[in-house]
Length: 238
Image (tube, rainbow, N blue to C red; front, side, top):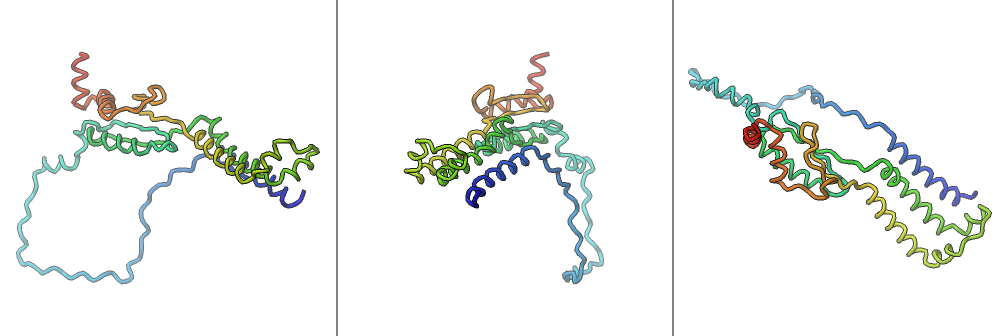
C-alpha cells in the first residue's frame, strides 16, 4: 500500500477509535471549587487613614427579629427545599426555552432549586452519530482514489463509481452535506422533560409539544405544599 492508500485507510480508523473511546470513557469528576491561591503581599497598597474622632458616633443596633429574617430570606419561600430538573435537547437549541422556564420558576417560587441538564439521545443513535464522520471520509476517499482501491481489493470498479467520479466535486459536497445533516439528526433527542423532586411532571416526548409558562407553573405549584397554589389544591382535595 502506498502512502495515499495508507492515509485513506488509517484516518477513518483513527477517527473511529477516537470516537469509541469518547463514548465509553467515564465522565470527568466534578471539580471542587477551592479557595483562591494566596498571594504574598509584597507591597500592599497604601490606604489613607481615616481621621481620628475622639468621640465615635453612636451606632444604631438593628432589631434582632429583623436581623434573623434577613439572615434566612429563603426559609419562607414557596419553593424552599424543592428541586426541579429541566432535561432538554442541547443540539436542538432548546437551551433558550430552558433558561426562560428556569427564570420563571425561580421568580414564581422563591427558594426553589432549578437545574438544567442535557437529555442525550439513545445509545444506538449516539454510536451512529460517531460513525457518520468515518463514513464521510471513507466515501470521499473512495471517490478520490477508487481507481486504485478497487484493483487492490481484486474487484473491478463498478459503473456507479465512474458516474459519481465524473462530477467528483458535486459528489463530495453532497456526501459532506448529507453526512452533516444525518449526524445532526442522530445527535438530537427532541426532549424537554421536567422533573419535580424526582417525579416526571411534563414530557415533550410524550406530549409532542412544549409546556407554556402558566402550565408549567401550575404543574410545579401543585407539587409544592408551601406555595399558595399547593395549599389551595390541598384544601380542595381535603
